[in-house]
Length: 266
Image 1 (cartoon, helix red, strand yellow):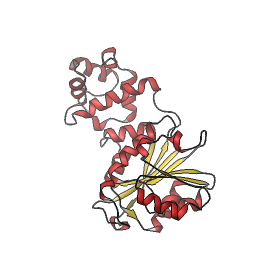
Image 2: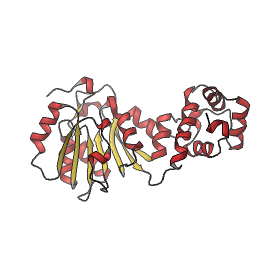
Image 3: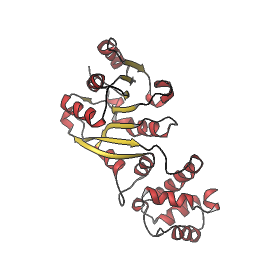
Image 4: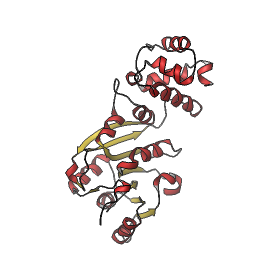
């Protein structure tokens, strides 16, 4: 069975790495696990050994048929043939049932799937995912190396890099290293729902022109007077001359809760 390059498929075949990933994910016999992009099923088989139930979502029709043949008779296994980005967790997991995500995510849609999971009203308790190492480092970065992806991820969860995976653990070997990231989803978000759109408006404005000082970038993107933006940042305890990648999530939250009327209306 050949990997589909268009779907960003790289099949993991090192069972020791799979066992390590499931162990670090903390999967137990009480857990329901959502696996996205199970591929040939090496991770699926280990999850079925440890978890109470596994819901596997596979887009590729050929792989879905392979997974049915391999696991349909295994208690606790359910396959959903479809696009994980078009499905909600309410459609995949029974109502009221806690769950976690454990997955080797396709490179081409890994960050989109992560965002889809974190932005839904019903979130997993934890995500243990394999991604490109570069993406993993952006998810777990700290100031002065932040990005929009890092800020957004850390708004919703507390991520940590578990271990690095070499290219030769896959068929075909990718051109880059991979890494497993574990994200513990926050039970309470830093801001209430009504302020979250403003938070992301400010963050995106700040990062839109990364080479500029954060006050100038926000003023330019929101088309507001620079003097007023600089005064707002100063009052919030943030030097207007800093760059966006140096700000922590907590500082972006402070800017959101102290935003003047013209920023809130932008």
